[in-house]
Length: 309
Image (cartoon, rainbow, N blue to C red):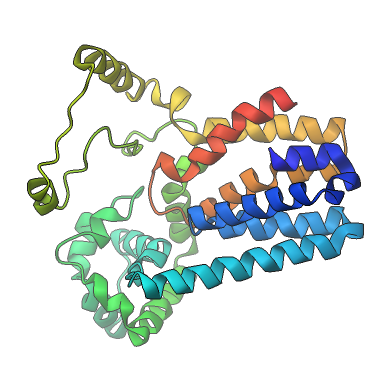
C-alpha cells in the first residue's frame, strides 16, 4: 500500500518526511516478521534506486538505517533475552531433501559419502522416511541427529556430499526441488502430497505446558464452531483445496494482473509488485514444507492487486 502511494505520487512523494518514515517502518516490520523478508526488502530497495535515481540519497539512507536498526536490535535482543538461535539444520532443508531423493532412487554411495550420511542417520532410514513433498519425516525423525549440523566440520562434509550427488544426478535433484516447492507453483494438490493449513486450536506439543497452565480450547459459540469447522473441513478436501487454499492460484492471478498493470502504465510500476514477487521467488528457492503460512502475505496482496489493476 505504501508503494502504491509512492508510485502514484512520483518524485513528489519523497518530499514528505511522513512518507519516508512510513516506507522505512514498512521495510523494518517486514524484516522483523520473518527471515525471508530480507529478500523482499533489499530487492525492493534496489528497484527503488533503479527507478528513482534522483532520490538515491534518501532511498540509500532509509535502506542503511533500516538494516542497521534491524541487525542492531536483533543482536541486542538476542543477548538481553538470552534467545537461543534456530538449529542450523533449518538452513539445510533443500540439500537434505535432495540427498534423500537421490538415495531413494537407488543411487549408491561410496564409502566416504556413506560415512558422512550415516553420522546423521542410517541411509536405510533416509530412504524409508523420504517424502517427495516435505522434509519433516527425515529431520524430525527420532533417529536423526539434528544437532550434528551445528558442527561446522560436519556442515562442510555434508555440503561436499550434496554437491557430489547433485552433480552426479542433476535430474533427480531438480525433480526433488520442484516437488518440494510445488505449493508455490502447482495449483492442484499432488495425489501423494498434502497441504499444511493452520492449527485450529492449541498445538499439542510440549505437553508439560498444557498441564502446567491447564490450557484448553473453549468456544463461546460451540454450535457455530461446529458448523465453521465442517465448512473448513470441506474446503480442505482434495477437490476444493486448489480453489481456496493452494497459494499457486493466487500467485498466478497476481502475476497476470500485475503484468496487465505494467503494460497499461510503465516499467516503473513493477515497484508495486516487487515485495510480493520477491517473497515468492525467495520461497521458490527454498521453501521447507507445503505450508500455506509462508505465502499467506502474498495471497492477501492478490486482493489489492486485482482492484488496483
